[in-house]
Image (cartoon, rainbow, N blue to C red; front, top):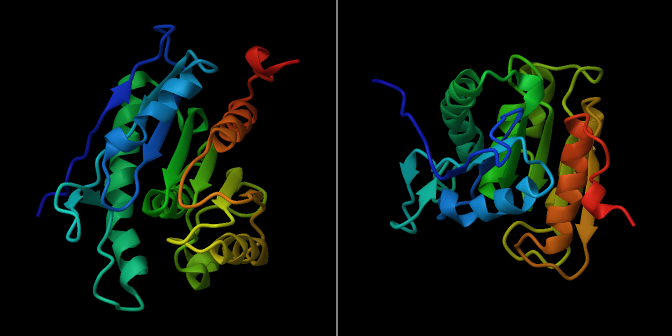
Length: 230
């Protein structure tokens, strides 16, 4: 059976000269339109960046109008791991095709995700053949931490920069997931940064978008954004 091919809403580089690619992975039951507006905010700072938010390859079983990267209903303890491993090569192929389209390398690519999309950004980014520029996880978690050491591509010295952001009042993916993820990464020798937004529920707030932009600037080797200097 042929592997599904995904695509979704995109915003081309405002400068007309593409130097970076930001792939934004949506959450369970949503689609790419849910997050592409974040790309519009970031392009004010990164005019050479293409932002693309692919729609997941599966229709969502619980929300038929939306999409899912994997199923979340059968209660199998291995459900997330098996689902992530199935979705990973689909996302990998999409990223590879986008890099070829724009003439970019992995060092020019950032993977960003929210909720289930954050799970896939972490899962995929840590297993790319070549390290991406960076990974941002909003309200997500690290799937299968027990598999990290034997399945990740990169060592502590070569792992991509990782930034995990979470709301303290998240009732969908509990805030404990943030600390479990950072601890698991640390135990595997993979450094990460994290930020806790006090009072934030299962969402991305303006502060999170700003902090994500600052993180990406560092990942892409760009100067501190002039529009943010005081």
